[in-house]
Every structure is written in C-alpha cells, then in structure tokens.
Length: 168
Image (cartoon, rainbow, N blue to C red; front, side, top):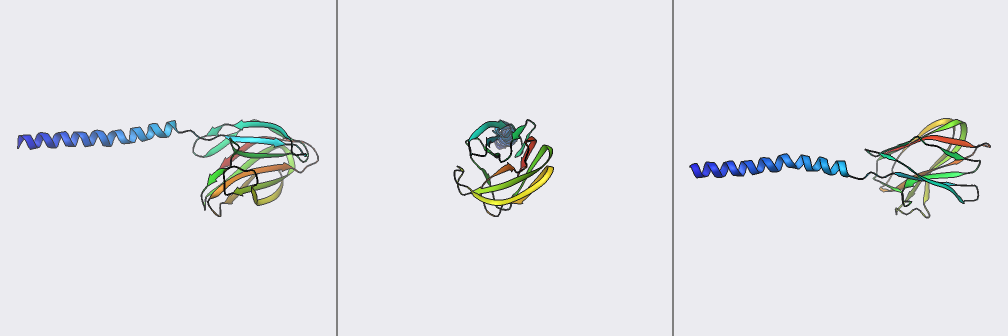
C-alpha cells in the first residue's frame, strides 16, 4: 500500500510538472514569434522605383506606421511583406487598410490577389477611388489566397501619406 501511494504521488507530481510547464513554454514561444513587417515600394509615373522602406510590425497582425511617404501625381506605392511578398489570408477574413494624408486628395486603391506569395503579376481584386484626407478600406477575402494593397496619387499635387495601418 505504501509503495502504491509513493508511486501514485510520483506519477501525479510528474503530471503536474508537465501540465504547469506547458503554458509557460507556449507563452515563451509566442513571445519569441517573429511578426512580419510591411515592406513598401514607391514607383514614379514611369514605373521606376523611387523609394523602398520598412514599416515596423506591431503584434496581433496589426501593422501601423507613423513615418511618411510622398507621392507625386501618378506615383504609386504598394504595401507587402518583405521579399516583396503578399500576405497569406484565409477565406472569410476581413482585411482593413487605413491611411492618412497631409490634405484631402484623390487616391486610387487596389487590393491585389494572387495564388502565390511572389507578386510579379497579381490580379487586381478590388479597386476604387477615394477623395478624402483619410480612409479605411475594408474587404473580406473571398478565398484563401495572397493579398496586398497599393495606392496611386490621382491628384494634381503631391500628397504625403502620414499613417498606414493594415489589419486582418
């Protein structure tokens, strides 16, 4: 009986140690997980690269940046993962892209969709035009695929993008 009680105590102790260490290791793995940054590329009206940069990532798939990007008339910028690669988004996931400008201006936007992460020839999925100093564009993925966003300055004067956020 004493022997069975000791054996039971040892087994119970081992189970408790295993159970209690599991959440700690999971939390440690989550803390050490690398969150992707947003990579942006600015193109002039001829399609030449003018500027490239990184927008730092903030956890929980929320990407926010408070630097600035200046776009002359007809210039375009895209927001993707480093590589540059599109973001993997599962079907029925809501994607919200927000931006703020230094003034009210006309901006053309494109949500692109592709079956691969490399975005050499993406399909324009959702497009539109906004005239405002800020906007939030929200769409729900109609299928699991790779997505990214691009905007073009359709105003006659330069605009400065002062804030960008991409949440999905």
